Image (cartoon, rainbow, N blue to C red):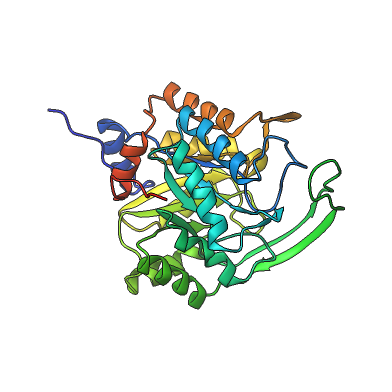
Length: 322
């Protein structure tokens, strides 16, 4: 007798994993993280910055198999900066929806390191279906390479030493504002400390299952991007979690392929990694989607359509309109 795949299970529980393999894993969602809020064309000319570039790049990724887009709208007066007003977000979301009729739109509340908390929330009134929610402070130290002419808005090299100071109060405030607007949080967990915050959100009834939780690995002050640390991070996910996995830079392919093997879901794209391999830049966001889709199919994973992804996440079948 046919038994359909389970949509959620405890990923590190041996018996539940074996049962999931026996039934077959659910189709794999691919989220394309198309641009990020810090790096730009100085790192890879294919990275989209303007609203039109973002929509065109997302369309190609959608055609290649992406069912979700995680997007950082940029400020139209300076595309090296994050969008700070809802109208900026509405333009990007509208253009994406025109080109991708049913893709799940996931707007960031991470922004860039210069934004206020209020500016980070400006995306929520642009009617995304999901919005990212950082669970813990995010501390980084790195060198941002120079942006030379003839690129627009050239600048010299920058030393970045910053911390996004998320607190329990702020995380709860962000979650409450999402709840008021019927925007589903995509919970971004960087290290085991985030589990305390997830439990706090559940206690306050600010999030509801199925929980979309993304493990982010390979960034400074996250858990180390190794199999051991990934398994430890997964062990304490709450029941009814849909797991989305991302890895940054050279660690992306290894970590995300583990998610393919374990029945999770994959995030790829130029926000997280601008290279196809060492010394060779990715040609597009679509190329990153095509590669992980090929790996998944080789491992007997089907690729989720946007309609299937909506059903797995409990989102409305009718996409947002702009």
